[in-house]
Image (cartoon, rainbow, N blue to C red):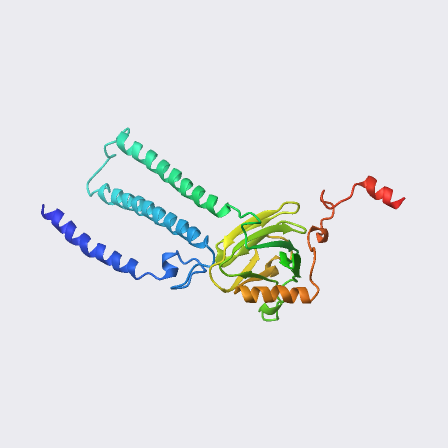
Length: 301
């Protein structure tokens, strides 16, 4: 009885301390120190909280498993250590059925649970908007070693586009941010992005979005999300794609609707109107880009 009371009195301050610590957590701490979270503000996209929650929940479960495992190891080392004067082997047990069932069933439950939550969140994140549902549809073309952005039905029903160049690195390693390719998106809008590659495998990664997607020649992948917070967010290619992969950088600017419309109007005023799609791909031997040898020969004749 006395030992139980001591345990209760010991658990009380520990519980109070944990409650105070959790109540005082910042946004960064609550989201596992992942980037993109600011105290008192929304996440950058509607999917960022989902990714962060899955991340932190997984680590909490894994930390619990680790503490239990480490505790049992230390307990076995201390309790069953060889005492002074002891000789020979300790009593040997063939098996312990309850323990064997425990360490078989519990890991199975953990694996199934983590798979189920991951599949649920991935399904939600990978559900794409239709073109009619989306407020903005953008085609992104990756190329060695920059990015092209094509805005569908942007100005008077026409596409407008911006063609990017490789990052300009200074002598001291700094990057000229003004020259980076920049994707503009309006805040509080449903966005659908079509991801394409003009040459080799690339990957579209906006760090604060907490999500990335690979891009392959001849295949279009998609990302759909809602923008929730204005700001400028760094992006980069996350797939080793050649000599200047590290300089394949871009920015995403989430702005007001008025600023977004002004940017598109500025692109149109510069004459950057019309299709800027797969016909500019470097891989012109893809089935959709290549005329048959018969057609070419007939044209030559």
